[in-house]
Image (cartoon, rainbow, N blue to C red; front, side):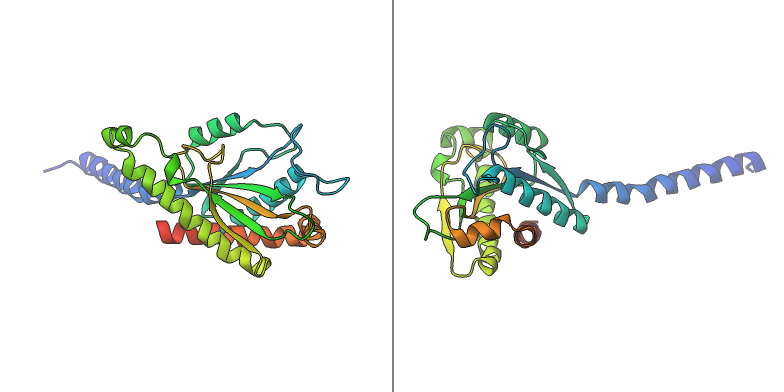
Length: 234
């Protein structure tokens, strides 16, 4: 027969065990938040293309990135990191190191286009090329070929989703998806794309890029794209 003291000790132990087991799901759920990296191009001494006498590419990309971060925060499903959150110079190499260190689930780099005359318009989306993968024999040997292929395939899916959602804001102005050897994405082990959002040299699009309401609409379209991306790849 167990004494009353031993019975109480046993009951206390069981209650503690139940408490520990009960807490595990909440910890696991927190760990499942998707990590998204937003890369506002340029910054600091690197201005990018000139939009107006008072605004440059670095200003527009940062404004849209911050608006996108705000949109994603509403969902409560994502952890969002920016390669810069102010007007400061961050080299491409430092951005790559940061991205490699935190290992995000997806990467979105924001740019503004320019050139080709005042009539050039629309958006372009770049994804890393399969031809730029590291040595195939090495990938097979260390077992990472399938993983690399998945990153590239997911990048294409992400680009397609963004294209569909930006088409709503830029009707019939999509300039297509392009495979390109972009310095930021090259060799990265993460699905990622570069989006050139409109032309600073186009008067109509320049106004849109500088308007807070339009920046917000672009951010919402990109946030929707990120949400859909995780739905189709998870």
